[in-house]
View 1 (cartoon, rainbow, N blue to C red):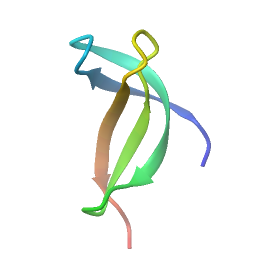
View 2 (view 1 turned 60 degrees about the vertical axis):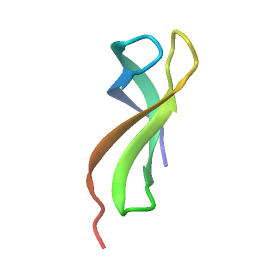
View 3 (view 1 turned 90 degrees about the vertical axis):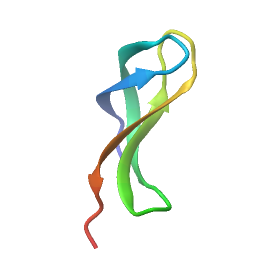
View 4 (view 1 turned 180 degrees about the vertical axis):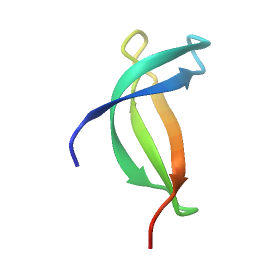
Length: 53
């Protein structure tokens, strides 16, 4: 899947950041954007909603 820009909360910086990420399906069946914080490099996740079956 292509990289897109998402907005998520970085728990290390304690701020919302825009990050480049890809959409993945979690173990619970939710779509989530996953990428790296551009400032500190920590993994940032953003839950997008229920995955279509």
